Amino acid sequence: MSLITTYSNFGIATAIHSGSGTRAMVPDLFRGLGAKRIILFSDKGLEKAGIVDKVAEIFHLTPNGTGPELVGIFTDIEQDAGSQSVNNALRFARERGADGLLAVGGGSVLDTVKGVKFALHSGLTDIKEAIPGGLSYFAWPEAQPIPIPHVAVPTTAGTGSEVSPIAVIYNEERRVKTNIIHPFISSNMAVLDPDLTTGLPPSITAFTGFDALTHAIEALASPTATGFTDAFALQSIRMFEENIAETVNNGSNLKARMNMLQASTMGITAFSLALNAIPVHNLAHAYGALFRIPHGLANAVFLPHVLELVPDLYAGKIWLLAQALNVEAKDLSTAEQLAAVVAKIRSLQEEVGLPKDFSDFDIPEDSLELTIRAVQSDPAAMNFPLPAELITEIGRRVASLQVPQAT
Image (cartoon, rainbow, N blue to C red; front, side, top):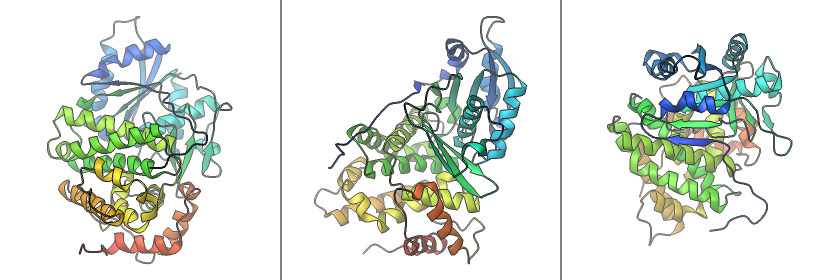
């Protein structure tokens, strides 16, 4: 195992509160942060499922005058945190005079609120102004804390966006996913309450879980990984392997749901702080932007193909990855270990009912040239560009299931 000896940093700006019923802490967390006027941001699906009410009612139980006030609920947030959703949410927050932001939802909601937070702090009215080139990177010491009280309550175990310093925002005009990276854009406090995830449909539980796995694997394989990021990545992978099938097949299991939430948080922490070569995410971003494929599902479908076709990226730590996935690989060669890992991932995907391709999506047969350009121009391609031949091969595989058979 080789780790870098040059400069690195590791830090989590978010305090994490975990446990069944921890959503009850939300008003007190805002009071401690000095906020008085809170906006709750979520989406229509969670509103319909009753999750928004479960969180909102906590504010009504707080005696008048002793806690922060919930001054508005905004649920017009669509898949993939589009810039229009961010701008509408931003306008709503300003109209209500909000001084505290509460995000309740999956990655789209969590990233939208990060965009709102950044725009409020920067005095913007259009979040696209913050990302003119597709990627805006801010680093210490130029990047300073953003003094806007912000609490995130994830309702899926996958993106880990509640603690990551990255906001992925879809630009509808350019049909590309853009990124703001800022060490203080994440929430001040994250509340991991498994009660809020038990109603998640099995299919979404499955592909958001594989989003967490992809974060951890890409962190582990990163050329800039450290002992800190490896520790988080490997434990995330172990917890994923132990709990993904149970959460999909028995969604009411609070212990498994809690473990998956923590695995998600650890996976994205490792990913964000070892950020470098991320070919799976590179492909998922491009396909998600072009064909509106949910991000976790795109990662799940691409993951085994990238492992097979970019083996050198994973070879150095394939033994560690095999161990974390509970794969018996002690007496195998490196190539055999990688094949065994891919087989295990495919087995888990089949066990939880994930599709092997994108046949459920409207992807034109003549779209390969378009996907090549999208993959190669995505910000994720900066550190690890993928050649057109490789993008083509992967694209053909996910379209027609040309998966090599084990011998």
